[in-house]
Length: 77
Image (cartoon, rainbow, N blue to C red):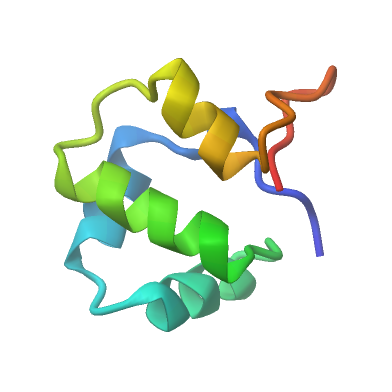
């Protein structure tokens, strides 16, 4: 499985995420695309998508990445 990267979160993907029922469905959605997504990340992505997919704030990014920010290669965990 690959790490999900910011560039993978296109507006189309965020729209699809907003239609999914819960975090487990989001994890399964990304697993089908070859990405390993944690429960915490799935929850944050769901909340973000439901807001209309606005750009993540620094606080949201810290929450998504476990407080470490974005890595050099742009991947998030």
